[in-house]
Image (cartoon, rainbow over all chains, first blue to last red; front, side, top):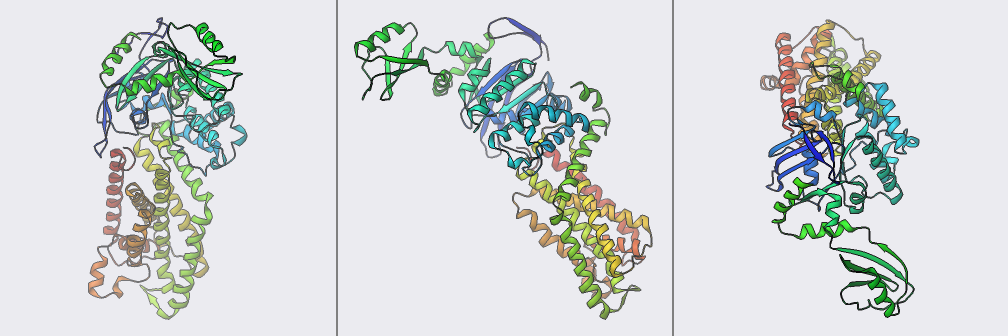
Length: 334
Length: 269
């Protein structure tokens, strides 16, 4: 595996190094004939915080399963830090931590034991495994529960336990399959902070999520997968720049029964005092306020609708497969 | 990472990281059956005690001698072997299937632990429970009858290999099982009849010719007789043949189990 120059999303040379993950022509057809992966090729650079998005059944978890060797590929290659996952099993697995989508620990084991045992599987001596378990359980706010059976934890805590378990051998690459599914906002935010912290410390992170805000907040690069094919693979900023329309939410002092008619603007009534307005690139916000004022509507506050990525996600997955060729071109320039 | 990479080089067949992984699996398995001791250790104790009271003491006193020993003394090796076989099998089948069912086996599958270390770890857990229950059964037998020891090496060798064979049997059952019914079918419909018809309670000499011939197709018959030979010095069959069969079964079942793990049967998509 040749090392090569890579560029971050701002276009700077960020490193000359082997990708953390390099996938080439990956195909997977299950025994029932379902084609889950249809020739995926993907590079994730070292130190990246990378989002892998797709609808349910698109092939995200299968891709992760192949990387983690839980799923047998039909053909293609997967390399972790330049080493083939099939021929360099020990080295690649040592560099890899996986947080699965489903809770998959023994619920009757103690929290501390789950993490220490995982350390043992990676060859950590007991003393070191205990130190690491304490370190990560503390960092993830689980230390107070370390002596309890895992079944006693809340849903959010169970997900954080999965993260602590995946980190006990301190992998260079962490793959998280929907790590904050069903987690309340406070815990989700603190999990984001933790992930950003370990990413800053050098851990490459690949994240799949259904919370597109999560991907937009955390990730620098993104791939979208649909029907087993990569349809977008680019930098997050570049992708968001392709948005032709931004959505704004306006809270008003007025009480409305219908959305006001504003030629040239897409206006939706969210509730009697809240409007959502789509503003195309080049359109003027002052014009919006003027039109609203003319209609006797005064604005109390305004905010950008955060899920910009959601619009792109939906539009990309609606596009026919011809897009994939164009998107692959974007990859090379990203 | 540095401590890990320096302490854990995958150079030899059983290098330090593999040994730590093996040790981890064994500790986890032993801790599991000790944690649920009411389910794992108490029932066999009660069952064995009942066998001694009913078959050995009450009915046995009317049967008289068998193979030159009192009936109670004659059935002791068979009962010990029965408890070892059942518990070695039950430990691995229930532990491995539970981990497969709740997917916690993925903890192991994503780690660098080689398949043979995984297999050795689970088998050692099964052997540990089998021997633990076997020891308890031996102690109970002392309450009812004296425990002879004709050849301690043969006794230890047979009990060890038999517990390995049935741990492997439990493992194979767990790999193929798709639900909890599948892990009770084999013990109920295959293992129990084979044990009872394997000469735990009688000498094959007491059977009619046809039944005696059928008994020779039952592998457990050879294990019980080999163990009885080690304890009492009497056997219905050649001890050399019994030991050879036991060794062959161990190797064949280990190889088959390993092949199942490498193929990912029931574990990897």
